[in-house]
Length: 255
DNA sequence: ATGGTAGATACTCTA
Image (cartoon, rainbow, N blue to C red):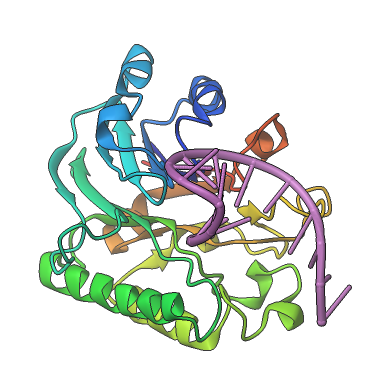
């Protein structure tokens, strides 16, 4: 079973690339972030043509998450339980093949100390509460998405430049570590130990060409799934295509 | 230290 996560940076602008990638990689499930479109405009018909069922949780212009799957998606939930009405669309969860999938788009935070930064930290705390109250670590839970946090020096092209900055500040890492302590393992790091393995590169200043990136897109799994984890790869190929997303898909394979 | 790009929306915000 192949489960992928990809921040597509607008599912409508990226539709040709997403379709091309689905045909090439043929994942069973694709979790998307930053779909940037309301559910009525989500291109479910295009994905149905490729054999995928869609569940979307979008909004106008910003954020938005979706799961497409070759097999049935059950018990779909949208948002965090304590979200205010009209809250940003950042989480969609569903059961697929006995796995509880939690697809997330963490707030970016903008800059350390900004209002959005504190919103990010609080959102992560609320995610932790949601996990604590909803699931047992003995279940098969997969938390994936654009976490907008690099966790270790080897996940950052220049740790000294990024230290203390947004996406790599200590309070962000501590908040995320509390989520991990729910009972997750970073599936990518079970199989890959090198530095320089990134999932996002800024559109500007030739960052991709120079591999000036961060690993901020993650697949985390509970213990049962960790035992079934065969491989996790970051597929850089679609980042080389015309009009790419600034993120690359991360693909996890399970027995 | 600055500015570089991209997407959606509506002349600006977010990343």
